[in-house]
Every structure is written in structure tokens, then in C-alpha cells.
Image 1: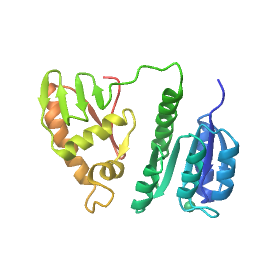
Image 2: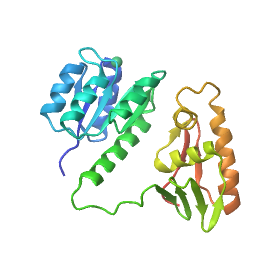
Image 3: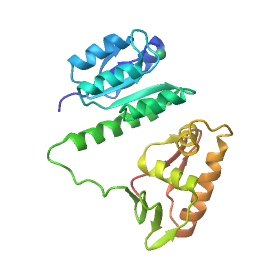
Length: 235
Ligand code: CA
């Protein structure tokens, strides 16, 4: 199989070097650039399978790189954003980035996001067409979450969740097998501008467990000590 080519655009040399080593270790082929203009040229000339794109860059801002690039070709882009750069995340996703990760990040989370982005891209761009999951339905064993109808069921039983519990469950199900940090969950569930303690995440996890795990005698949500939470695809 052809090697997966990743373009890493990051001007913080130490971070770039660290991520590059991890990617190489995972068997990816890596090209590095610390300049937005150079990165855009590279991305337009070469066919990368995925691009990791910092936003604050010399030469050309990452969001501008993203916009100009996606006008020309389709490629999955994961943004590397600063903790407090709310508008960058929103604008980046609006501009067509498939995902973002907030710095500082755990390398395992970045690697997992890369795997998911590559998998999704391959399955949507592949002509042979693997069966697509029913629109708006996420599932785990007997559990189904219906995004459009805002409904969660286990077997035939309806589970009543608050908005934030629903969002938390949806986020975990969308990222099956990826350990999500409390910060990430907080971002996704409470919004980028939420000010408060990250332990609110633990509170919602507890509610979800009491409504699902405890009631149906399953172990859906796993705690990864010191990191965060995960729903595993295998039951
Ligand atoms: Ca930067």
C-alpha cells in the first residue's frame, strides 16, 4: 500500500519536530513547513493525504491557506489551534477543515484524530462505496442516538437526556475509541466560550452513567485515568 503523506504546517520548531517524529514513528511520510505561503504552494503541487495546519503562521495565515487550498482541491485538514482562539476554530470549520485540535494536545489524541480523518476521507472518496451509516444515527450495541429527532434509545427503551448530556453522548459516540480529554469535551459540550471548571464534565459523565450504564447493566463509558473518557467500539 502507498505510504500516507502528511503535510505538517507549524512554525513552532520544537512542536513541529516532536509531531514529525511521532508521525514518522507511526509510519507516515511527513513534509514539514513553517510558512503559510510555502505550505499553500506545497499543498497545491503535491497530493497529500492529510494536512495538519497551524493558524498563526508567517507568510500567510493558516485560515487563508485553508480557504485558498480548498477552493482548488479536496483534502482533509486538521487545524492546530490555540486554546483561546474561539473564532479561529469556528472560521476554520466553516472554511471546511474536518477537525481541529487545541494546543497543547496529547499526541495520542492527535494520532487518533488523524486516523479518523483519513478513514472518513477514504470512505467518502472511495468509488466502491462502503455502506454508509444511516444519516444522523449513532450507535453502540443496543444504544442508538438519533441526531435529527434528538432521541436516545437502548433496545426499545427511550432514554431521556438533557441537552448537554445528549451532546456529551453524541461527542463520545462520534469519536468512538478516541480518548477525549476533559478540555475537549468541555469545548464540544459547553461551547468554546464556557468559563468554569472542567469537572463539570465529570458531572455529566456521572449523569450519563446513571441513566445508561447503571440502568442497562453495561459499561459504555470508560474512564482513562489522568486523560479523559472514551466509548469503545467493541462491547
Ligand atoms: Ca504558530
